[in-house]
Length: 58
Image 1 (cartoon, rainbow, N blue to C red):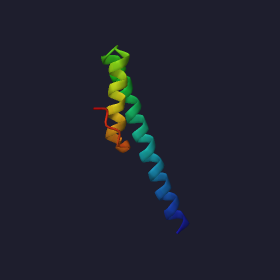
Image 2: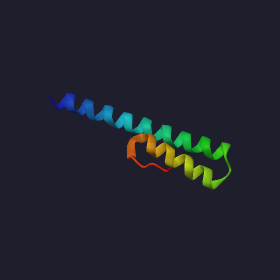
Image 3: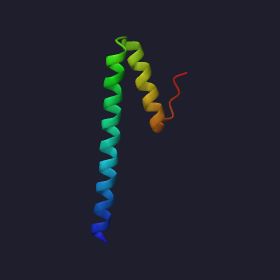
Protein backbone atom coordinates (compact mmCIF):
# COMPACT_ATOMS: atom_id res chain seq x y z
CA UNK A 1 0.00 0.00 0.00
CA UNK A 2 2.69 2.48 1.03
CA UNK A 3 4.73 1.45 -1.98
CA UNK A 4 1.91 2.29 -4.36
CA UNK A 5 1.50 5.73 -2.76
CA UNK A 6 5.23 6.36 -3.08
CA UNK A 7 5.06 5.41 -6.76
CA UNK A 8 2.19 7.85 -7.29
CA UNK A 9 4.10 10.64 -5.55
CA UNK A 10 7.11 9.93 -7.75
CA UNK A 11 4.93 10.19 -10.85
CA UNK A 12 3.46 13.49 -9.65
CA UNK A 13 6.96 14.86 -8.98
CA UNK A 14 8.14 13.70 -12.39
CA UNK A 15 5.17 15.34 -14.12
CA UNK A 16 5.78 18.55 -12.19
CA UNK A 17 9.47 18.54 -13.13
CA UNK A 18 8.63 17.97 -16.81
CA UNK A 19 6.08 20.81 -16.72
CA UNK A 20 8.53 23.23 -15.10
CA UNK A 21 11.22 22.23 -17.57
CA UNK A 22 8.81 22.79 -20.46
CA UNK A 23 7.91 26.27 -19.18
CA UNK A 24 11.60 27.11 -18.75
CA UNK A 25 12.35 26.00 -22.32
CA UNK A 26 9.41 28.05 -23.65
CA UNK A 27 10.54 31.15 -21.77
CA UNK A 28 14.09 30.77 -23.08
CA UNK A 29 12.76 30.32 -26.63
CA UNK A 30 10.61 33.45 -26.27
CA UNK A 31 13.60 35.44 -24.97
CA UNK A 32 15.74 34.32 -27.91
CA UNK A 33 13.11 35.05 -30.56
CA UNK A 34 11.89 38.40 -29.19
CA UNK A 35 14.34 40.84 -27.61
CA UNK A 36 11.53 43.13 -26.39
CA UNK A 37 10.94 42.73 -22.62
CA UNK A 38 7.26 43.67 -23.05
CA UNK A 39 6.79 40.83 -25.54
CA UNK A 40 8.52 38.40 -23.19
CA UNK A 41 6.22 39.46 -20.34
CA UNK A 42 3.13 39.14 -22.53
CA UNK A 43 4.15 35.67 -23.69
CA UNK A 44 4.92 34.48 -20.17
CA UNK A 45 1.44 35.62 -19.09
CA UNK A 46 -0.05 33.58 -21.94
CA UNK A 47 1.98 30.54 -20.84
CA UNK A 48 0.85 30.91 -17.21
CA UNK A 49 -2.75 31.35 -18.37
CA UNK A 50 -2.55 28.18 -20.46
CA UNK A 51 -1.37 26.33 -17.35
CA UNK A 52 -4.72 27.09 -15.74
CA UNK A 53 -4.11 30.08 -13.48
CA UNK A 54 -7.24 31.66 -14.95
CA UNK A 55 -5.61 35.02 -15.61
CA UNK A 56 -6.76 36.62 -18.86
CA UNK A 57 -4.37 39.35 -20.08
CA UNK A 58 -6.80 40.78 -22.65
